Image (cartoon, rainbow over all chains, first blue to last red; front, side):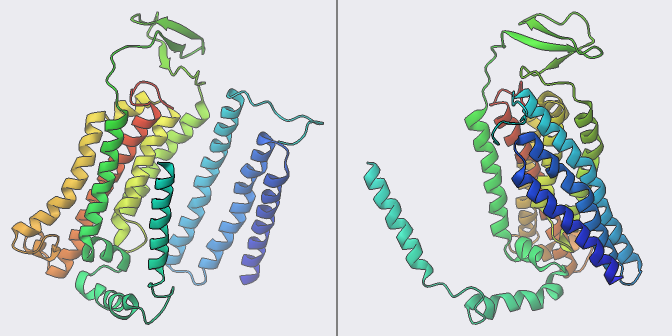
Length: 107
Length: 274
């Protein structure tokens, strides 16, 4: 069980690291939002699955309930995070921020 | 004048820094707080108040005065925001924007006139697009946010949480409604007067619980006096008293959050906001 938990945590950490590097490295506002939105999907999913499994060391009603609550976090983040990214991009377009194209310097 | 201000600020700052030298070092086991105060709460909280979460019992029972005036400070912040920002100008904007609900056609309507058919809805002058995704997701999430806020308020006895946190969540749920639809929809759901009354009611519930203890022949905010009213023993009455106070804090914080948001986002006009 511990091996599975560690594996999931490592997958989550890998995606979170990649996303953080992406936020720092991408050239402009819209492309930086891309890794920021991606972080919350696979990274959070695998990290939360790891925590939920780690909590199930012995199966009682209490630990199962806690694990379900941890997985509910994923459900709400999956709903809220893409919506927030969508709203931010929408606001950027309406404020007149042009997307970055190849050859321009990074902003 | 600026130089005098700078000198005063520097003097006050250096006095404060000088005073910190008298503090016990961080985490010192021999400091007065760790010798007398903390062990007393850690050992006696469960048998005196029947609340497993020591933070809650210290916050709302042992230091009830402190929390009562914290709530009052929040209430004052809301009132100050209202007094500074709210304007009751009756002058209407030159023209308003209306959008046809089905086709998305946006028209300008001169002041004092109505849109040509009831299929038009008023929109903000910042040309807000009709955003189905954001509206639907917010409509889906708001009930769960509010349910979780009530859980946080009621579960403050056993886990991290309580009136302040739950109240902020309740306020945020209404603010999310105002941001995803528009300010007018949120104000239609929770009128300005109802909101202001809610702020005052929260503080009144807190102070009223204290005054009730006084009327029942005990000290102000000594909840064990509520035992005959609640039909429980005095220790359980302290636990219930903490809950009553937390509800008051939650109501006050929720009202103030919404009040401040409405005033700031619409610059006191309650007409167009985010």
